Each structure stands twice: as C-alpha cells, then as structure tokens.
Length: 159
Image (cartoon, rainbow, N blue to C red; front, side, top):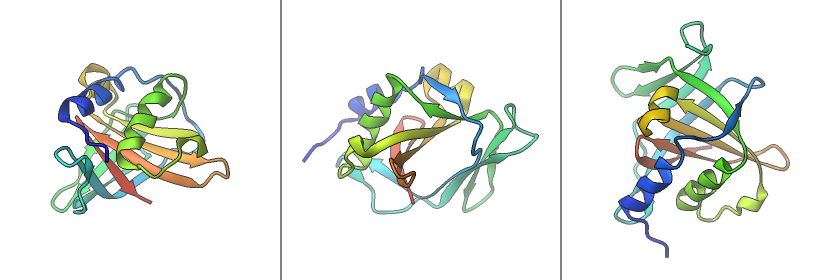
C-alpha cells in the first residue's frame, strides 16, 4: 500500500500553481458534493464526508463571468475569481499524481480529457491557497472521477 507524507502532498500541490490550461467556454458549471478529504496520516480518503459542496456557475458577479459557491452547513461563501479550463501538457502530470492518491483504482490511460475549475485564480497563482476541482472524462465522455485540491489538501468529489 502506498502512503504519502504531508511533504509529498505539499510538493504535488505546489507544482499545480502554474497549471497550464486553456480557457473553457463549453460548459461553465461544475458541482463538487459529497467531498472526502485525503487523510495525510493514512494516505487514504477519510470515510467521513465534508458537510458542504462547491458549485461553480455563471454569474455577472464573477471577475470572469463565473463564481464558486461553497455551501457549508452554516453560511455560504462566494469566490468571484473563478475560471474553468481544459488541462493540457505537463499540467496533466499533476492531475495524474493527485488522481493516484484519491482514485487508486483508476487507470489514467482511460482519461481522455480533464476540465478544471480554478477557484481563487490569483490565490492559486501566488501560493496554492485556492481550490481546484478536476473532472476526469473517459473516451466515451463519462465522468470517471473528480479529484480536488483545497489549499494544501487533496480530496475527492462524489460523482
């Protein structure tokens, strides 16, 4: 069994800051619910689901026409610095590494494309303080998994 240290996850997430991607104009919505976070001590997903969800949607309030709303059990928070992109090039390696942590049974060869919601664009560019949701799609267009990164932590959205 693979185990991962906090240092390994920090290196992985820090490498995601300059994620090379192109702007996505097709579907500008993404939902991440039933969130499970990676337990850094065990290297496995915590079986407890986080009480909240991310929803990315079109809004004139967003700096790029999109906002991300995080709805925890108390009051929702809105992030206005959001974009949806298609992951390309070397950045795909970072998604593959994160996927190996949170989707160990996934054969990444079956992934045809990756859409990414960059939540907190400036924060991610500066120090990975924002969040990312990655939507892995197979050759048939079906969603195979949704890894996510929140700050320096990794996790998985339910599909």
